[in-house]
Structures are given as C-alpha cells and as structure tokens.
Image 1 (cartoon, rainbow, N blue to C red):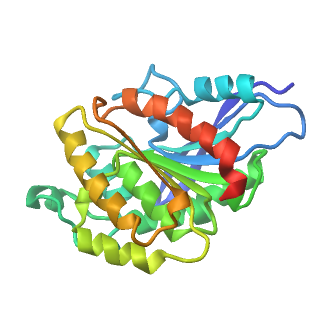
Image 2 (image 1 turned 180 degrees about the vertical axis):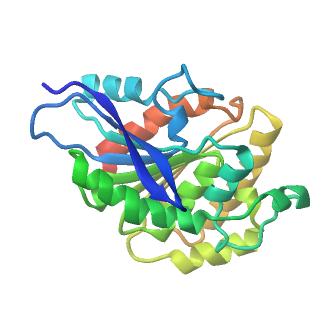
Image 3 (image 1 turned 30 degrees about the vertical axis):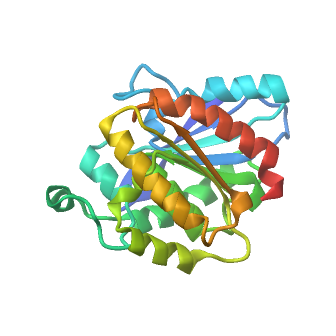
Length: 263
C-alpha cells in the first residue's frame, strides 16, 4: 500500500513559477484515479496556513474511499497573492463586458483565457505524466468557488472535450450582463456538454446577490442546455465561505465518482 501524499509542483506561468499541489490518495501499486482540478489550492488541504478557511479535501476523499471504495486525485492551483490579482486571473474577458462597479474594474485585468490555457496545456500534461491519473474526459472534472466558480463554468463550457463535470460553487455570474452571458453560452453549445453542479447560498449580502444572478443564469441555461446535465442546489442559510463549500464538495465528489461515465 502506498500512503496518501500531497506533492508540490512549480510550473511556469506568465514569467513566474506557480505552485500547484497534487493530493494522491492511499492506493495499491498500479492503481489509478479520476482527477478533479481546482482553483485556490492554498485552501484545499490543511487549515494551519489558510487565510479564509479550508475545504478539507483529503478528509472528504478518505471518507468517500472508506464508504464507496472510490477516490480521486485533487490538483489544486494556488492563487494567494491578493484579491484583485485572483479575480483578474479567474475572470475571462470573452464572455462579455464586465458589469462590475467602476472601482472594481479599475483594479482588474481579466485573464481567464490565459489561466485556462495554463491549466489545459501546462498543468494537465504535467499531472498526467507524473501521477497515477485516469485520463480522458469521463475521468476529469473542474471545481471552484466564487470567482473560481465562474472560472469553473467558463473552462467546462470552453473545453467540453476535457471535462465531463464542473463544480460551479457560488459563481459570480453578476460580473456580466445577462444578454452577454446568454450569447456566450449559446455559442458554446454542442452535442456533448459537461454536467454542471451549480450551488449557491444566500446567508449574507454577497451570497444573496450571487443567488439572484445564479437563478437568472440557471433559467437562461434551461432554454439551451441539456436539462439532464443541469443541477442547481440552493441553501439560503449558507454564507460565502469555505464552511459552506466544504460540505457541498462532498456531494459533488460523490456525484462525480458515481455518475461520470454517464456524462
């Protein structure tokens, strides 16, 4: 038996090295696993160094492995420089004109397309060459929260050949006008689309604003997206915090492991 482990990689991104941490569950020699790529790798694995809260993904995967016999590899891409830099990195410009307040626009330089290219063409090849992952669309998912939830939605629809499922947690859809989002989504629809697990809370002012934009976007999706690949979860008492996203990840993980072959 090979013990679980978290391995750190330094991968080139925008002229610097970016920290990417990879969690590999306990396994037998030769055993391979599906993989979930995630934003905010600094918040995924332990709570002694995080600023905002922890997802406790190893504990969740360990529990899933004990009950169902299935597990995944987690690839966490770090972004802990600052809120404006993180928002810029996770916000694509191609969806449409930003609807954010002017003061926020001044601090942001949307680079979601560059980050997407980094994951697809740098992170994925490195992970697939160094770790025991099952490759291919049906073994690969993406997950993120807040701006990361928006990015998860963006990368899944932009790369339906890469991901069979996306965890879209508390996505800041209100960053774009509804009509811009509608046009962009319609431009991405093809025969085989990923399953979207969309979650929002409503327990604080930001999450209530997100909830409103999620409901608008979800209604729009029902007009054009395969209905059997849409799942909306709303928990109105939950705030915009890892405390809310950590238990939702448990359900997303189980859904991915048990349903991925269907999508």
